[in-house]
Image (cartoon, rainbow, N blue to C red; front, side):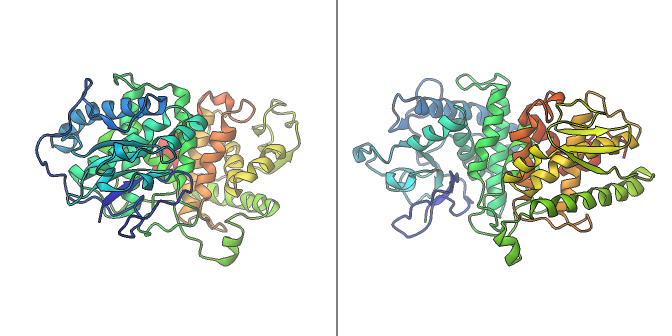
Length: 461
């Protein structure tokens, strides 16, 4: 059967091949592509022609990305993986399932599939027994729709992810589906950093595009409650964003080395009926009460174990519209060194609760971490203090995720809600705007604390 790797776009169901196999998230690519003679005729710029492509912007963006991906991986594969880059033998296919001319695809699209099967999707396919093996196919109408809502770079990101599967077809891939998919996200991140640095001949991006990309990844996550062992698992929102940022920050070497069986994923299944009914969310008041006990429990332990001191837990003081007099009145999240108080505007936290209960925990944890820094003798007004507090919130979240904070139990999707909070509210001036960080940077700092702990957070541990 065709060996295909697909991008989950929205919650769209992938069509069924004539063999009856779901194909958008298919069997892992294990065998390297075998050359059957000269590849497809190339065009100036080094990329193979995209069959079915039009002059529409989405096809231009996708075609430009594919050309730049070929250039990037021609350099990276020998340097990082020790093998020469072999262009995709089956080429590339653009399809609009709603306006289809079958004559453009006499042998079908990837692995001979019916072009209509790519609706709301994109996939890489490798099956040497079928035509057009070792190829990428995409639904241009749907990519255009996504680009209209999440930035014009999104079609390029989808191409980069599918090209990551082509790289796996050449150098090997992890065994689990979730590791395969997130490694492809990492490989896409490595290429995106190369583009952002101005190295691409055709593709370009601006800093604001990165925030749009991370928001777009929310559409690509698995449904909350999907298990990591499922055959088609792609990863939670945090898993996928984290993998992309890892490639962006550390390059393809990290993608090669960091996706072994020991890698931690936040995706999980619901284990209790009541948690499933609530979709992992506690009632607001119960959640705030839990946070009020969980944060002291975490910081008292780490002060004793890592910092050799005693932690004086600050009380939580919710307010409505105007911060306490010890802080600027227009701030939604505050720490008052005078009195050792953490305050939060319930207008913010009740609105953030719509993202999920852990969005509220994330919000309150950030000023609480400023209080912890203050007790470590670090100035809470330092320009980098908020960056450090976001990182420490990532550390706290990781400890909750692994069950190390008494009285807490992580639910599926919780850590995704941290990402959503930072992208949605963290960039607002009255929330974390004083840090002067983009949403992408805030999530990256949070990820550093989640993965590395205090060592990433500019505190002496």
